[in-house]
Structures are given as structure tokens and as C-alpha cells.
Amino acid sequence: MESVSFKLPAEMMARLEGLARGDDVSVGQVIRWAIEREIRRRDALRTPPRVDQRMLAPVRARISEDFEAAQGWSDLRDRLIAKGYTLRESGGGLALHEVISGRFLCRTSEIGFGYPTLLKRFSQPFPGHSHTWLLDRIREVPVYVKT
Image 1 (cartoon, helix red, strand yellow):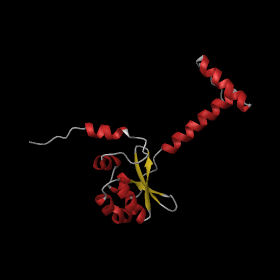
Image 2: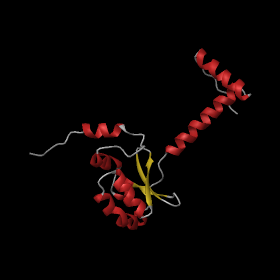
Image 3: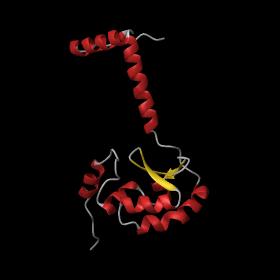
């Protein structure tokens, strides 16, 4: 193991010592656990690799009409579930997964339906999506009309 030295406010150190005593471990172990949790959390946020476009064509063909016709998030959800798919938050956007297996298929942007476009169209964030501020940013983008 490597040694690391850093300074902490007295109140934080007191809390760490209390946590360590409660768990009957060292302060160093509490810090290692916290760092380990943060690394796992960040790894989970990483977006999956891009999918081969040839593999996406059948999926895109099967659900494009549903994305285009949906009147809101619940309508889109119902349409996709009927075909065996579901949406999940993925980084700053959405990903398409198989309902039963939960297997990742692709990002919605890879099939032509990026989260910002859907967000603007439905005028509300995807239910439970952590990036609710995107709607405000999208509303602020000026529209330029060529004259």
C-alpha cells in the first residue's frame, strides 16, 4: 500500500474517528472504504461503448415509430415495454435496455432520439433522471431564424 498525507478540518477528523471506533477499524480503513465507494460510483456512471450501427438497425426499425408517436414519457415507456424494451438513465442521457434481461442495447442518441431532443419535446425530464437542469439549459438556447 502507498502512504498518503493530507489535512482535514478538526470536525471532519472527529467524525472519522467516531465512525472508525463504531466499526472497530482504523480511520485509514474508513477513508479507503469511502474512496472505494466513490470509485465504484463513478465507474457505474461511465457510458457503455458505442454499439455497431449494423446491430442497431433492426432495433431502430422496430421502435422508431414509437419514439416519434409518443406523447410523453409514460406513453413512450408503455410503447417500448410492449415491444420488450425499457429506458434507463445513462450518464447525461438515456439508454435502451431489454426489459426481461436488463441487457444494455444502446444509447437513445445512437438510434436518433437523444435525451435533449426528447426532453424538449416532452417539456419535462425523464422520470427519476438526475440531470433535471438540462431542461432549463435547453429552454435557454436561442433559436436563430435565417432571414
